[in-house]
Length: 148
Image (cartoon, rainbow, N blue to C red; front, top):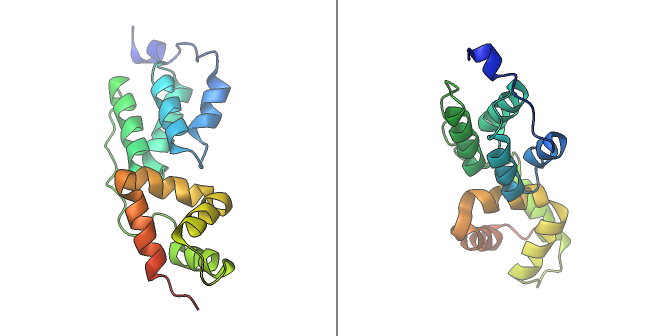
């Protein structure tokens, strides 16, 4: 089978659903699952989606999973470098705004809950990136934010 024939394999039956899941910005676990399932079909549309995710996802674990699936499918790809610094532009301003919206004597749990409700995309990105260190990082960030 030459490479053109290989890329004509049928899409999975639930392709549209998987495509939506792979692009759902507020759930890195769902994106990871979709990538694993999409990677079972060697099809140009799947390769295009996996390539886009590998290059642009905000959670490095998701980028790595896309990279692994593309390699498994025989694609010649390079894993992008892990992003340094803020993963979400303007993070500090956003977090300060959330903190200011709460009563002055609010607890960390209140802040965490409001962040999750207001900006699930940010919550999800950093939870996916920080893993087990997420709560420690978020609480430390919360306590260092200016109250004014």
